[in-house]
Image (cartoon, rainbow, N blue to C red; front, top):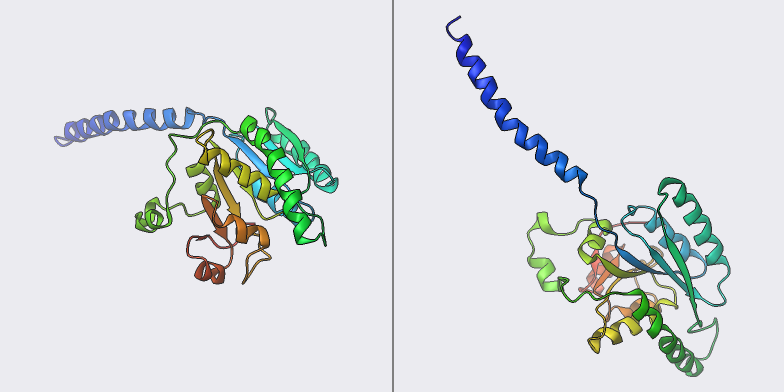
Length: 246
């Protein structure tokens, strides 16, 4: 019986220590992540399917989503509208927009004429990229060396964490030819110190040993280049291997 007061005192002290922790946890849960503007480059065929599968893992914070697709791509628009309609059932305040640019290269188009059409597409993309992408001058971006030097617990371990590092505004693409003029226009705006944009390139799951043509070009211009097969990581050391993510 003499030990009872001691037990009561200990329980009271434990409760007093527990209350601030509970309040802090509630405060953290109550915070809302600010919205992140996201420019998504869609492409015909499997590219759009893969990019929408990746977007389905993102929270409502990634809004508005600005989709860019080729002017002749009708199938992707239908897929995007269907995806956004289903997403609106879960996130009522979900917002998106659709923008079209001239296709940089048609199937079986000659390389000579492809240069001209790509340049035209880049010029067309400049005002679009400028309009959709706010300034990111204060954002920290890790180089390949810095990434490797990070402690294991601080390294982004999934594509969602990579996107969080690149927030609040970024370009997300996965290999369609349309992404080349969009990303190059964004890179040019950054080079001229007009607008700072983060480019996250996710190579298609179909690419096991070699990069796509878009990947070979944007490997040198993207801030985060993500591959889904270990052989590609060995060949392209700048890339980030996260396993299969789509």
